[in-house]
Length: 126
Image (cartoon, rainbow, N blue to C red; front, side, top):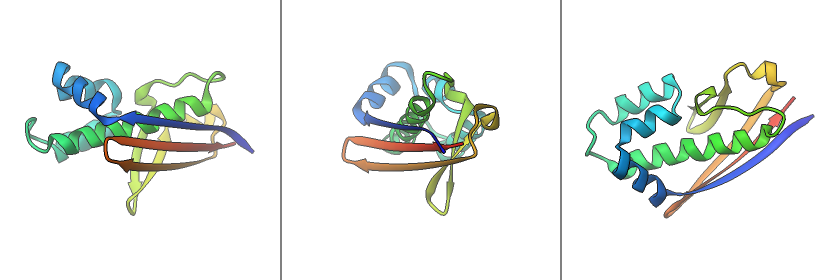
């Protein structure tokens, strides 16, 4: 049974603007789970290097988490850090903290980038 479907699109220059105004770490700490924040800090130990890759990482996580939120809303209202995005052979995978309590048995996520945009779709099964 499908619990919900969510889709989101992010204009990456918007994420660049947030990083420029507030810094990368405040944004990262706000939206990333502890596991993701660890990975982010390992991949990007120096703030001013690989800015485009940092924005792509943060924008992708933002996009996927918004899609998860939309898939469960209005029954459940998740917070950013309740969703962890990982990879399995390059494909994004989801872990929703306490997901069984929300009825989630399986999740499917697709992410795509094109120029200044990232788009994701999430299907949650119960």
